[in-house]
Length: 114
Length: 117
Image (cartoon, rainbow over all chains, first blue to last red; front, side):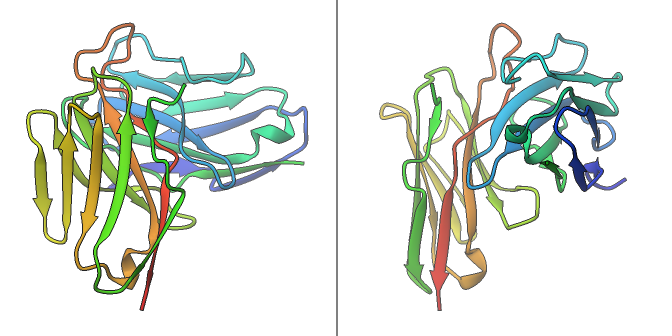
């Protein structure tokens, strides 16, 4: 596709359930980022993939959060045993590489944990 | 600890005037800075960037200034238009990182700009 695609666009889940969020980056982009934006808050870094390097997981808030990326394509962010504080918009972005290029964002997945 | 700080959560400006959005950073290793604009229910969109080898970059109504000694950058919008009303995020990245942090984009909390007609 022409841009970063995220699915689903909205997800409502019950507390304690697992959820999986998907990100399709722009073709050819080696870098992929996940961010979270809680209501009224800024963009909180979660995880960063760059090519074949080990991902930077320093932003993952707990071990309930994990993410994978298949080569330089699709990424999934998994949240296990969801809690109400996990409710947020989860944004994915990709960039051509890390050297002085901007990242392009998807529309985000709005996750609501009830 | 916040590495990128936008200390003003909101800013209100009259149409036609200058909007100045500020951003401070703490990591002296950051060498590339970007501004993003975000409308409600949309993902952020790239606006303008600056490399640490420059102190100014201009693109139409948008100019970014970088003061490396003060670890401060600002975005100027002249003249401001009602359509500029959005949340503006400052972001920084480090070209020569370590521990896998190379290229990681760190964002500030954003400043909500309101341009009044």
